[in-house]
Image (cartoon, rainbow, N blue to C red; front, side):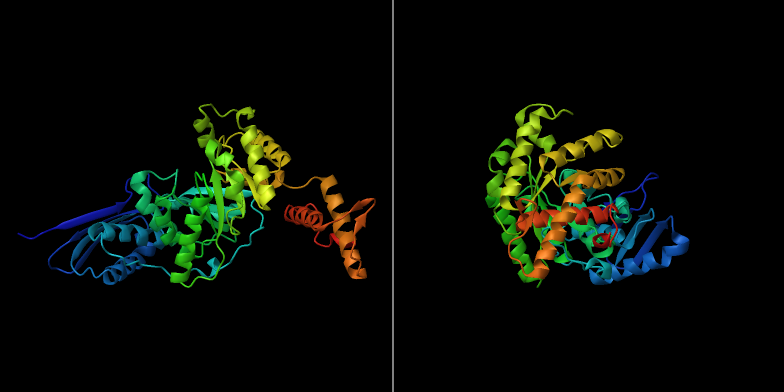
Length: 405
């Protein structure tokens, strides 16, 4: 009797969009039989068939019945779903089907770049990926952790890997939140070789966890001959993490920012998160102080009510007043308000202009000591002033030729 092996992956149903379902049934003979049911058959049917046959050749599948129900999935999604079905058939297989790297995805990042807004996207929901960069967040987080159910972790790894190669994020910093360690170390194998810019380390409670991630990243960079810098953003989400915030913030030169996650933190305290935030004031203050003492950015938690724009603005202004430089987003409509609310006010801009102009004038004259009125201007003051000018330019609050005005 013929032995039949069958495996599937993906999503199907009338309400599914930009995704697909793949079922592969291995047979003893008969070649490849592809049963394609696609909402975009007229325009892309041949391209889908070509991709499936290419993947069959790559994974050495010669005899199989393949059912593919396509709801407008892009090639990176079809490839991820097909590969997962193959891996379920052959768990020992180490082969990876890698789509060509989009030439627009080769940009690098810097340790001190702006991280005002970071848009979280669930790693197993590819429908959100293609247009995310159009909303102009400073960063896009492809999430492998809390927004992904345990049963979807494998699928998310492949989808995120393929998205990092194929999707144009329009210059947004490319971030991935891995799973809590030790599971998260496996995630690194899927994202480090794909020009990821930053790794978020969730539920971080010690410098050792940062070292673990860094050592694995260094190993993978060496294995894949990767030269680009990959930075880290530990997320503090517990009372223990708060008490160790400085050691975490200063654990590595590649830690560029320190974030707080208040949902898990307040749960750890056994209290409720409130709009007033009295229960988290201490923790947020510790995060800011630990970050500033380490010379890195402090990043605030997300604002969970996506319909309350006034509440969001108030929350951002409060975060800014505490010393935070960025905030997480869970919906694109939050991005504009966050970016604008972190912008400097008129008084801050005018002060920054005077500082930068005085410093540049002193440089031209070869003067080593710079002063403005009765106050001395040192390097950190000039750096803050230049950051303020950069924010003002980004928000179109001053013209590009502001020096001549």
